[in-house]
Amino acid sequence: MSQFKYGFHHGGVSVPDLDAAVEWYDRVLGFKVERRFPIPTIPAQVAMIANGALRIELFEVPNAAPLPEDRRIPDRDVHTHGNKHVAFVAQDVVALSEELKTRGADIVWVKTMPHGSACFIRDLAGNLIEFVEGPIPAGEAGSL
Image 1 (tube, rainbow, N blue to C red):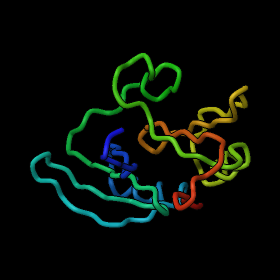
Image 2: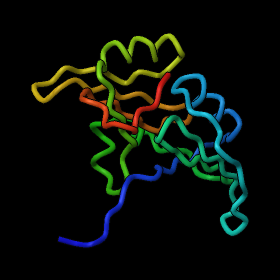
Image 3: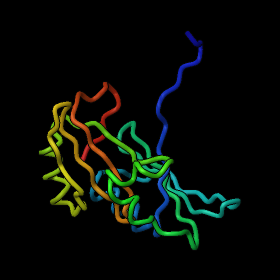
């Protein structure tokens, strides 16, 4: 067994408009800005947003290519190699999806499957976000 331990820090998401994305992630998912900073070598404007122990790094890069249509659909996105989506756990996915709908979330689908319920939504740029049903690990919960 290795002596090295690690935990999840954040997921990174490229968006076309950083201010609009910060507003969307706050209004829909309850994430607040932890800090903003530039990365001149990309160049990018960046916002690290947090909800409890959960973090997402949002990038706005001038003239970035938009997300291809296939990357906006969960069952088609997996046919392209690379990172697919960020996923969060929720105790009641169906109830959460109803709340997200009232907040203006673009619900892709909500499914109850033999292994549990899941929901996919899209952010304002079409990036996929999944919620799976299950217990929330102690100290890792975010809230709406």
